[in-house]
Amino acid sequence: KDSGGQGGDVKTRRSSPKKKYEPPFPGMNLSPARESIWLYDMEKMGKVPKLAAKDDMEGIGWDLILDARSPAEYKDDHVPGAISTPVLDNSERAVVGTKYKTDRFTARRIGAALISESIAKILRSPVISQLKSNSRVLVICWRGGERSHSLATILARVGFKVGVLKGGYQAYRRRVRVYLEKMKSLKYIVISGPTGSGKTNFLKAIERQGGQMIDIEACAGHKGSILGDSLTTPQPTQKIFEGLLAAKAEEMDIKRPVFIEDEGSRVGIRHLPIELWNTKKLAPRCRLIVPVDFRVRCIRDDYKYFEQKEHMDALCTRLKGLHRRVGKECVDRYLELAKEGSWDELVALLLETHYDKAYAKSAERAKPKNAKNGEGETVYKVSLKSEKDYDPEASMVVQYFQKFIHNNPNLAATAAIGESSGSGA
Image (cartoon, helix red, strand yellow):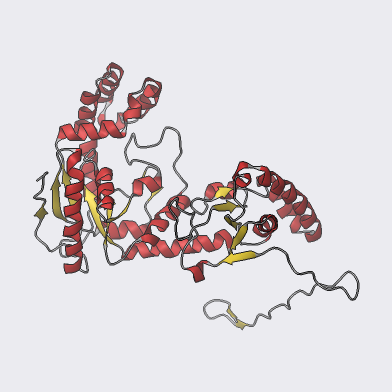
């Protein structure tokens, strides 16, 4: 039964009878299929398919995930780790799709010829030719239909262990939405501190010490500043960014703290999902206190490629982009110091005239309105003086916030501000 909307009539849909295959001549029987294609049902398996890790001793990952959709579909979004192996390119898909509306048989014949040619190329490619006979290969298309089964059938006949994602990309995207919704329930601890305080490095240290963390900047492909975009790789699309975040959320234990970096509502040109942004604003904070000389060193380490001559033009272009924020005089001084190679002085000036002011404004905008019981406030401070402080201080932070979460199940930041008492205190 299908309701036609609020107040609409209830209509009954009759299920169409299953198609019966008539033999070419009477007395013939169907031949048993020689291939075995397995359906990967995310609802039943309980997780998004993943590639096998190098140390995958349990055999729970796929050796290869192939996306049989067109290049344009793949570029917009795809399962993390999937490789683009289109059986129809963008123009071919358009031709077959248009023809299918008026003549399904001819469309299938044309599509089959094009798909066969593409599959031949795929089989000869290094992606397939280097696989072992017992390799596990998952194939994905839009709905888990003709395109994925066409490729999967041939791969299964070759002898690989082949699966098809039930429901295709559409099922994957629905699963992403489920895990984005889960992000509301995670118990975030926000690592805050001005630019250059080593927040990303501290997150990695937290992970080494057994803590849970989500590296938002890594998922966004951007370091979150005027210099933060990659010189070689564009940021992922918004859907891919959300998929990467969802994959991280899937791994998180909702009973334990999840550490994230203090980001604005955008990282580069990508927007934080509203489920993450609204929860993050109310989360307790752990503030890093770092001397200026250490901050300068951290920034130079993060952006050392800009100090190479071949990237000078790219650096200058980005510095010129600060003209409206800091004025012509400041920008001219930036450019002068860059061309002189006075990197410490340049970074210190950027911190003073741009980064610290921008961070303060961003922090002010991010403060939750009508916060209750100290929500969104700093409850712990860490003093870092060198890279050697990362791991011991991270260990203390993990222990502190595990107790904090236990004592504050609703994450109300009612505890007195704590401070590290280790090497960096």
